[in-house]
Length: 262
Image (tube, rainbow, N blue to C red; front, top):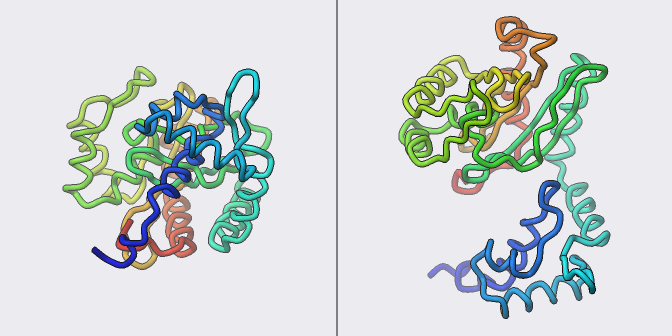
């Protein structure tokens, strides 16, 4: 056993996992929901939650017993994010790109089979679609997900495709695994992926993969998002293919190195 594993704190791990459950789509939980989601017993869950409440990171409604992050937790997260130079540089780059082209931009990291959005800018005075901060079951139906899959080694991408949940969100969503594998091959060859109303009706997206600047491993993706009322897929390919590839290349240089390739 390595020294790091010997001093690993399981209690801290579980506390952090509880904090990680909360997001825009799931801002409130009950103790039983937390216990069920994380596979913990109720006694341990109560102890972890009570500790986080006493630290001021969570708050519990005395009547409903609902649990949510506190204002102190929000300030803590804001300070932590502000200390990350990599994130600041990514945001500055996206802001400059947004100002120059007035397009909707999403930057997201892959966490298992989920895309967690790091930053989003919406185009001004145009029809836009705001994706959730954390999007599950989306590797097959979003440009972000397809671009990320295209960055993986063939065997790894094939394994993910074979085991993923193929959610059909629109009539255009690809739910055939062979068709999806062919799409990923195309995306790998051209270094970008496109989705045409596969995640939401009226949404066309073009995305390119982000790579760890040291190991070169795929870690996420960046996408430009458009309305079908304003652009066609062919127009987007012609106008933005080079820009999305260059954007992904530039953003990849700003990413923190991933230890052991994630």
